[in-house]
Image (cartoon, rainbow, N blue to C red; front, top):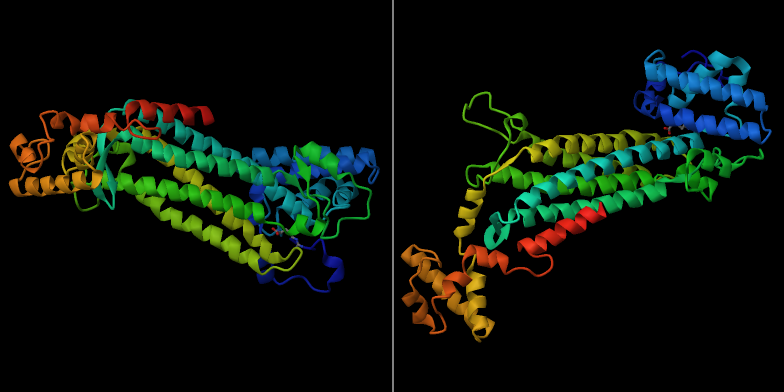
Length: 457
Ligand code: ARG
């Protein structure tokens, strides 16, 4: 781009390497819509306040509309040598309108302009992420409804611990995602504050009406300090942090699905459309999607870290370091959207192998706590009941049987408190059905959990 907007102060053209290094249009062009909408509001306000001629203000708005339409239709392409999207749009406007176009930047700096554009852009992105998380929630809830009685082992330390249902397990994720939605909503509150009018750093001497721009663009309120208005990127960090936590949840879920797909577990089978094969091993069906989500989580954490480190040493107010915010936050956004868009249909088409889940739950003395509880209900102190049950498990291991198949004589050898009804008390179904405390795995409790999340989203 020959002849910089700021050329008056300089006696030389900028070095091509500096120009390339400095330019952000390759990644900030995605804010063109917000840049143009922001400029239209600004021009409208300038006209209304008599800072520029009202007729010229109208021409600017029309000119900007034309540029927006031409970019949308592909008629107008971004100039890769432009410094950024803001300079590009302004130069294009001036090319179209002549001197009138040059009046747009009155009472404004790119510093408050870019702060406005990112906020507007991230509001749109946050809404898209929220919609995708809600879609995932619905997929999980529908699946949970079908598996209220699908018994599976619950684990601690990766050891079979107590029986739960697949619905109960799924609902743990539904609750994590509900908190993610809360965090994203919270981000939106602080995104929705309008910085334009902060100027380069010290506002402006023109009699602008910031509230008017705020209203035109649908923001909740205006920023309260011009230095902070141009140099705050907390909202990027907050969004990247909410996305990082969301990715952490997707990654944990992915990790479990990867395990469940293994021959060692075989709890689920992925649809062929959502798995991949090996170039050498014909038998392989690999859960690549989930592995990539697990891998990309690290990348999003990197984006968050980039933003945190980028900001920590910046003196007030704007410094060019802050241009680095965009690639990081856009990468986090694109990555989480891509992950959600792939994860949702993958989960939706996944086959749940109920029998394998149940068989796994039947092994591993998962009902030992219930056996001890049986004795407690007959009046024995829990610690004694715990010890006796431990001895029973030991006997089972020696005899190669389970608590369900251990003969009653063996039970009675340890205490006369055991009767025929112990078998019912330790049956897998009883173990699950009896855990009906709020938040527990019993179907009625999980139904309540599903209703709660449905209501919240
Ligand atoms: N491209 C710049 C950015 O993203 C816009 C602001 C430039 N301001 C400046 N004073 N150089 O941060």
